[in-house]
Length: 334
Ligand code: SF4
Image 1 (spheres, protein in one colour):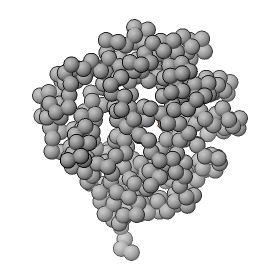
Image 2: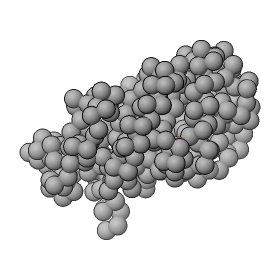
Image 3: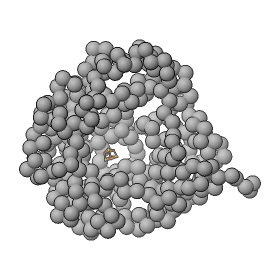
Image 4: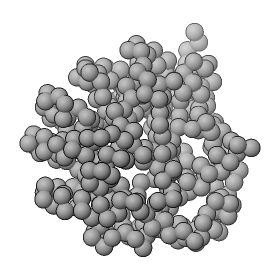
C-alpha cells in the first residue's frame, strides 16, 4: 500500500453502536434506527481512518452514552482506540442511573461532576415528549441519585406552545428540589424538532417566570426579527469544520458531519465506499448539502422560506439552518 501522508487534523468518530432507550419528539438526530452494531466494527472503522488523520478520537455512541450492558469495558475500549481521549460532556444515561446502582459510582470514578437531564414539563408532557411512560419519574429519581452521590444535576427544559404553562410548574419542582443549574430553551429546528415547528414557542408567549432561566434570552429572536436581519444578507450559509472534524456514523454505517440531522443531502458516504474517496469528501467537505448551500444566498433562502408573520423563537444560526434544510428537502423532492 502506498504511504499515505496523515492529514494534520483530528477526526472524532461517533458511532451509533447501541442506539437509545428514548424516542424524543425533539431529537435533533431524528428517528435513527435502533440497531446494535457488531462488536468488532469499532476496530475496523478506527483502523480505516487512522492512516489518514494525525489524531483520532472514538466514541461508541451518538445518542444516550453508556447505553450498553458493559459500559465500563466500553469506556476503556473507546479510550484505547483514541489517540486523543474522548470526553464525557456532562452527559450520562438516566435510564441506567435508575436501574444500575453501580453506574453512578462509576460515573464519579471517571470524573463526572455534572450530568444534564432533559425535561418537557411535568409527568404527562415529559413522558409524551421523551416517548416513554415513566421517563419523568426516572428523571426525578436520577436527580436524587446524582445529588446523593455528589454529582450536580443540570436540568435542560425544552419549551413550546403546548408545554409552556407546565414549564412554569416544573420551575416550582426545581425550586423544591434545590436545582441550582437549570436552563430553558426552544431547541434547534432540525431533526424531529423540525416537526414541532407549528407549536414552536412564540416570543410574546414566553412566561415571565421563565425568562430569567431562558438560555441567552437577550439574543433570542422571533422569526420576524431574524428575517429583518437576514433579508439583505448576500452571503452564503455554508457550515464548515474547524480544526477537528466530527463524524456521525449511523448503525447502517452511513456517514455525516455533526452540523445538523442525518438526512440524504447531508450524507457524505458509507463506510463500505472507497476509503481514499471517502476521506477526500470528508476533508474537502464535498457533500450535496454543502454544494447546494454554496449556490443560494441567505437573502434568497429568507425570501423562499421565511414567514414574516411568525413570532416563533430562533437563534440566528438555527434559523439559517432551518431555512437551508427547507431548501434541501425541496431540492430532494424535485
Ligand atoms: S434526544 Fe437524546 S435521548 Fe432523546 S432520542 Fe435523541 S438521542 Fe435519544
